[in-house]
Length: 146
Image 1: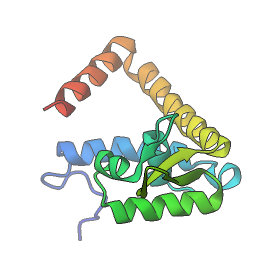
Image 2: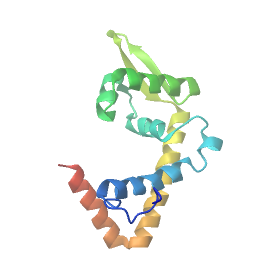
Image 3: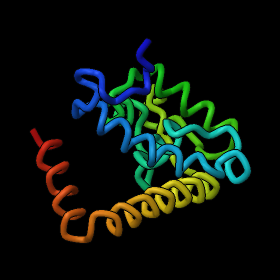
Image 4: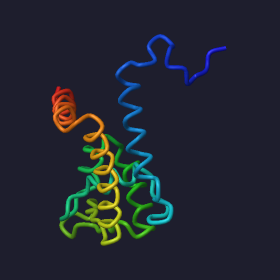
């Protein structure tokens, strides 16, 4: 029987899997000490914290950027608010609209995740060399711009 971890299988090294393996490295670095520093946070929560601009954003706008439903994103925001990472308030001019902001704790968590990503990028730059790594980043930018 062939192991599911056996890369010799046909199609095992398609680009989706390769990108997924690279993303797993980033996730592992972010989650390495999360439970001690920022209990209750998952990678998806860090991603949401990163999407919130310093002056805040509406749930509708965040949902669109995150490619989530408003309801799903609202649940994430509520969870982060219960843990103290975000606040939200209804706009006085339109009570249907919720404006979401990071708290100082949310800013700390964001800085933590960005530092973790920077560590991975530094390792990859050393591993590939600065020129190859910058070329890799530029290639990803171009592919993502399609």
